[in-house]
Every structure is written in C-alpha cells, then in structure tokens.
Length: 290
Image (cartoon, rainbow, N blue to C red):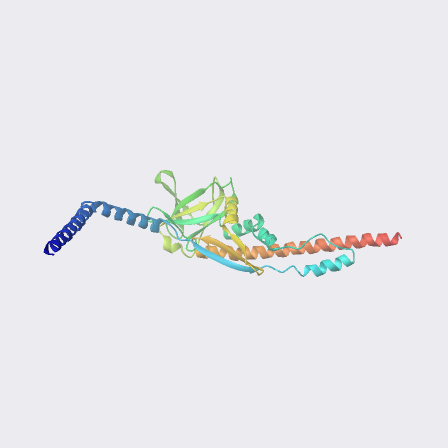
C-alpha cells in the first residue's frame, strides 16, 4: 500500500512541476515580449485619439408632416362622372408628394434660401477644419456671378471690425475692407460682418464656395423621406454635423414644399375649371344641334 501511495505522490509531484514549468515559460514569454504589448497599446490609443479628434459627429434631425388625404376627391370625381364631365386623373399619393419634396426646384430654393453652397470653417490645432455655421464672423455675398463654381475657397484673417486680409499664394496676404465690393474669377462679391466678428479678430476663416447644382444633388440623396406605416404621416430625416443647420434645412424644406404644393393644387384647380368649361361649351353645342 505504501508503494502505491509513493507512486501516486511521485506522479502528482511531476504533474505539479510540469504545470509550474509551463506557467513560468508562459510568463517568461510575456515578459520577453512586453515592449510589443506597450507598442500595440500606444498604436491603438493613437488611432482612437485620431478618430475622436478628426471625425466630426453627425446629428440625425427628423421632422414629421401629415400628407393630405385625397380620398375625398373620389366624391368630386363621381359627381363629374354623373354629368359626363369626368376630368383627367388628378389624385395624388404619398409617393407623388415625396417626388415634389425632393424635386430640383424645391431643393434649389432651399439651397438658395440658406446659402448651403457656402461653408464657413476654422482651422484647428489638429490640422483639420471645424464647421462654424452657427458662429461665422462673416457672410459671403455674391453680387454678380462669374464663371461656374468649381470648389473655390477664400482664406481670410479677420484684422479688425473694418478690415480683413485675404491670404494668397506663397503665404502672402492683401488687406481689404468689409465695406467694398471685389471682383475675381467667380464674380463680384463682398463680405458682410456678423455679431460674432469680435470673437474672430486675429483668427483665420476659410470660406468654401461649392457649385450650387452639386449641393442640390447632394441633398436629394441626403434628405430621406419615409412613409410611416398605417398613417398619412411622412418622416423626413437628414444627417448634419451642425444640428442647427439640419433643423434649418428641414424647416425651410417644409415651407418651400407647402408653397409648391399649394401652387400645384391651384394650377390643378384652374385646369379642372377650364376643362369643365370646355366640356359645357361642347355639350351646349351638341344640344343646339339636336
């Protein structure tokens, strides 16, 4: 019996030594490669910091609108049918309203109203630019367009409340007045000051001038209209790094859409009235010829 216990103790001791040896070998490997783990941690931390510094957050802005119910037009249509005065099809659905809302004329008006083809930015210490839509010290005013915009931009330094310096090639700059108009390749323009001007004295501002048609095409894709199931509501959403601009876009979009919708309905009513008058004249002539 003692021999059996001795043999068992030997095997247990050997197993313990094997596990202990394996643990020491693993620990030695970890200690040997510890500089690599530190390098890996530094790289991951650097990537995360770079992402947080250079990536602008996006805000998702929503609005909801009730699309008018056109089912009542069926009664009007039935009345016209009884008089043999059926008019051409004029009923509209949600898809038609979405088409009107995302149409080029509607979005062109929104882009023009809010000057969305102009972007105001300020350089940061991380070699990037921050959008200053809400706090821009100046407003670019295009008095007379020149050639088509092809991604032009102006870099200015606000000198004081009356003057700014326009940065040119070779790090040179020229002094201009906020009161005057100027002419260059993209037309006649001037800079109007805002209430935020004093906050930017001595600072650089970049004014990016985009092609308005490109901006219209961009917002045709960026603004998403989604019908809400089992209702006549339409959800409208847009993503923007400046929440205030996103809200302004949706508010102006709804205003322009309502104006366009009213105008479209007015034209439809006029066409219907004209059609009925033509049909009445035709019927009167037929009765006179009997």
